[in-house]
Image (cartoon, rainbow, N blue to C red; front, side):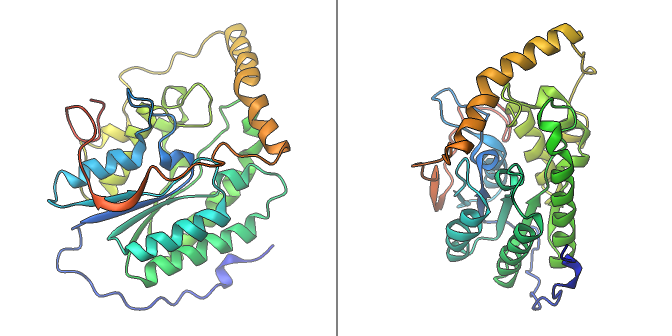
Length: 287
């Protein structure tokens, strides 16, 4: 196994801006989580943590610009290929990166190789003077069938923590967030965050950026009551239904070499001034 600590840690000096918290432009790169699945708008499009975060940041900064280059199903090669190059061309103040999930879930993927690829992409963003926030993998230990991937996700998340430290970037450790180890944060497909989960992640990133959406409990303890676990017979019935409706089609696409993102383009490909698209209410919340 490659020791990722052997990689060069010398980064060029980055001049500190007069106001280090000012974020006037933001680009999100990644896969389905960053695209916004499964946080639907009334029109069938997706919102998600990145859009929620952008709207929150934009409410504070006139002329705030935002691009979301993420596409569902994207793997590391394309996220740190076309998406990275476009982000570098835009040269925003902030980039969030959530990548690797679709690679880690393929048993043949070399985790050390994709970690080196991730490290190289983050390094390029930092060399361009861009603030970077990366998201780790989340714990799948509570999810039947998907818990088999728990070890691989944990190893890759350790790589990401090392990458964050080495490149002096922020990391949102989804694995350690108890609020995300609750089924109420997840879609019925068990692969994507629901609206509540995306709100939690957006609030955590905003807090990390010193621009909180609300009190710490917004992301650390968002539930009014403990999760009530259904009886075993109901859990088994739900798992069978989930396997037929979601797991089998998901595995089938992989066997056929297809992706849910085939033919899709980013939902917000240009770095343009943000226009509020939610109907009304508090930034980062459902409208």
